[in-house]
Image (cartoon, rainbow, N blue to C red; front, top):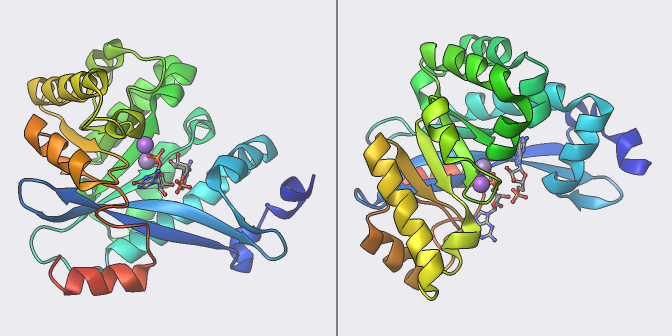
Length: 253
Ligand code: G
Ligand code: G
Ligand code: MN
Ligand code: NA
């Protein structure tokens, strides 16, 4: 089909961009990280969302190549950013095909080397689905990445068919609380209870918890009340281009 035909190499033709969405520390009230998010602007079809092109790229066998490009773009951008306090963490989403290809560890090492990004600043975001799909390999590769100093986040936590067992099995650093719970944290006792237990688990295991998809002050207030450490969402900042992010950070965010 059309996407399948046009995708390979589209990033070398300037059709892809990496946007950055700030992650805010609720304790320190400042930006402490960013998440890199891929965008494809097809010359005729317009914006194609990742939910559409990632599966196409995986089937076409080019997702690891696209991901290497995205990782490098994001890392190159991150090293140029002003950092008022400690250098920002850079979150990058990793697809299950990249993990399955077993090139992730080498690719990450190469990008760190090429860009000079400190490994401690990089947070690889993997989903529970990826963890489930790939069983043992994931654990081995994650362990290797962590030995390099890279951090790992479990993305969309709570939404998949997980797996509190993953938390004991995998050496991770961050839990990203799925936005489906965050959406109703201020109104629905069950959502609130789920958010609270994730915050509690995070504290008990020494993991940072990032609430995703925060859209209203009421949600933010509820999350603060639960002691959630970090938040991300349209209320705080939308995904933005590097120039805009640089400006935001220079203004002392
Ligand atoms: O930015 P947006 O809300 O459209 O992202 C939708 C989905 O696409 C999210 O689940 C996000 O993790 C994923 N995504 C965004 N950028 C990347 C990327 O560089 N690699 C992979 N594998 N997924 C990405
Ligand atoms: O699956 P992942 O967590 O990587 O998804 C990130 C996606 O979430 C990005 O595509 C981003 O555009 C989107 N996103 C970020 N903040 C919000 C928000 O407040 N509300 C909603 N609905 N989506 C958001
Ligand atoms: Mn993510
Ligand atoms: Na997520």
